[in-house]
Image 1 (cartoon, rainbow, N blue to C red):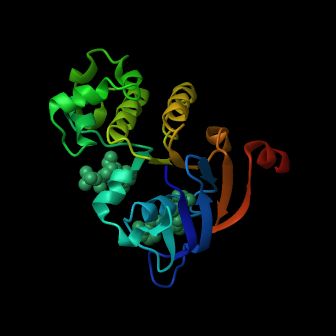
Image 2 (tube, rainbow, N blue to C red):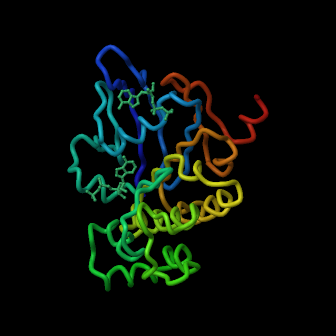
Length: 229
Ligand code: ADP
Ligand code: ADP
């Protein structure tokens, strides 16, 4: 399991507007760190930098001490699995959508992966399993089912690092609890960075960082932060 670290990261999308002001934090190997903060604080930007959709203007992002700017895009994406708020599914079967997470692996590989302990519970309650058609953008599935397919798609490549980007924000509260339980299970042996705007969805993080205007203003456990409110 790798350690993820941001080391004095300065970043802005536009030249004269800095979004992250020298951000430093560490997600120790196998631990679960959550970042919370108001809308616009820069939370999603952190995820985009980790996945190298953008590069910082200053500072470094390290995986096990290695600057991610120096590893190939391919190896970076093999290591990091993203679960976004609203996953785009292809108008095809669940099997196809999960296979896509493995770069379009063959059907047999998908079936093998789908029977793995990690993935099975995600799809077993769907009516026709892997052959279920998801419809346009997953329209035929409920929000929770859609998110389970998205999580399975992310897990087929067995990434040691998970980036949860508002992964349950679009769900009603009951479904949210169910998906949170699923995420807790699948993130157990992975280095996990969760981005959220509600404290309630990250109660089980080992550490919570509070981001405001691109700066860390507080950190602690869930109970510490609630006490200070
Ligand atoms: P959060 O996830 O905490 O809501 P974001 O990281 O999405 O915050 O955004 C932080 C700031 O960066 C916001 O002021 C937002 O308007 C700005 N921003 C986000 N994406 C872009 C972009 N592609 N181009 C320019 N500014 C952006
Ligand atoms: P590849 O080229 O290896 O298929 P992609 O860049 O298309 O990789 O995406 C890798 C994973 O990241 C996919 O599971 C995809 O759903 C997810 N992903 C891609 N872009 C975004 C994004 N902007 N926000 C969240 N997740 C994304």
